[in-house]
Image (tube, rainbow, N blue to C red):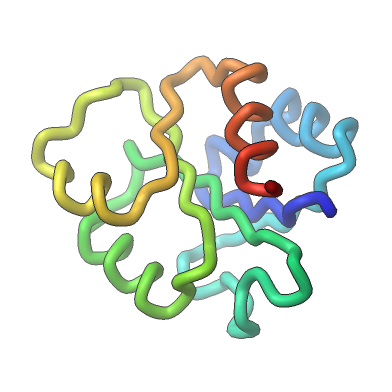
Length: 120
């Protein structure tokens, strides 16, 4: 069963190549305007993984948001996208809560490898 991919952040929501690539592979995309837009229902119900893909570079207080998101949605897989692969100020939050950190430009093979791993 394909994951629901939640996109958060204008840069990802407007990325036509990303959206096209995901839909061509059968993923359902939901565009979120804020962290609180992730539906309240329990993620992962019915063996359907829920993924939140977000741009870590544009978010403020990201450490607090990651802590809150995993508390409210423990079954949600958090994938971050960044222009850099090193965020020392977020080491603890990233290590505890992120499934993966993808570096721009997104490597499609890496993204789909991760998504396949989530679905197993």
